[in-house]
Image 1: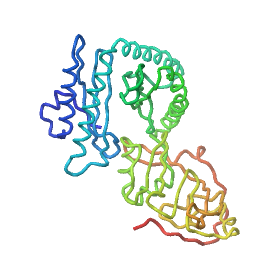
Image 2 (image 1 turned 90 degrees about the horizontal axis):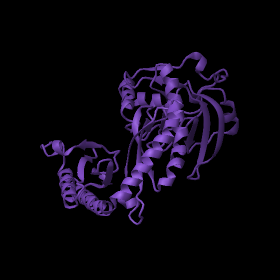
Image 3 (image 1 turned 45 degrees about the horizontal axis):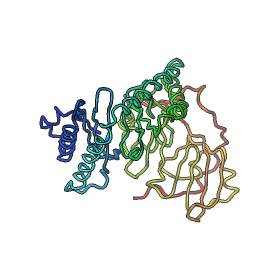
Image 4 (image 1 turned 60 degrees about the vertical axis):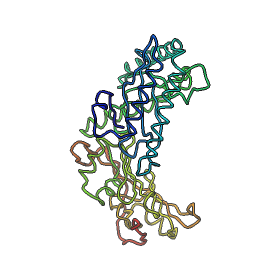
Length: 370
């Protein structure tokens, strides 16, 4: 999302769309209509600037000091070229702002007490994380979208934390609470993952790295372009798609690739590779254990460093034959700033048993679809 404050927006920002002006103007009008002893104000408006954003527009309204309301709506995937869909999204956001103000302003005392109660308890709970060395902090607590609590007296709230994201970088992390009683459970559920990311970041930083990448993902990236340029994308993006539809995704500091989206012949999940529409005799599968997977399967993303550890055959979801192969998947280190990739220290690399490679490739399956 790209965010504007009103001063910049109404200073004729060329990047802002007609729909965004409509959202901002409508939200401002709604605030003026509900002004009393307390004057609500629009603090920012945002608009989707890339396809990963689900919502077209977002509005943040300050009802009173320390009391913020967040409104979002729209789906950029369905927009027509003439922008009519975006304008419809804008109208829905303005309506949501007006309804939210009407619901919140008459019960400001309850809203204020609810937010302060959550804010107070969240600080107490997160202090224990910080004592354990976990990098997390409370950024804000604001009201959730009205649609989540329209029929209830008690408002739903969103807790905004700063914690490590999938790239192991500090990022705003929203936690929505249907009830304030859910706070401790939600934070407890989150703690294990945040703790794991914290430990992973320490481990990688000690090796001078930003993350790890599987050999398969590295091969896929190299097949379509410059490795260093693509690796640098992880400084800003946790996932993206290669030209054939292969998704490359960074989760908890680890990059993997799945060509199954764009390639009907192969799927990857961790160390397992599944080849569809392929039959291999059981004896041949058994003899492939300990050998490079490239002696069994032929695909541009596979390489000799991947050693077969286990095999299985069966039927695919479509009913045809399939082969599953578990491989020793080398993991390399990378720097998302420079795009450099290098192997892990020898003592940290998992050693896979290897048998003499005395056979050539025995089975081939097609690569990506053209």
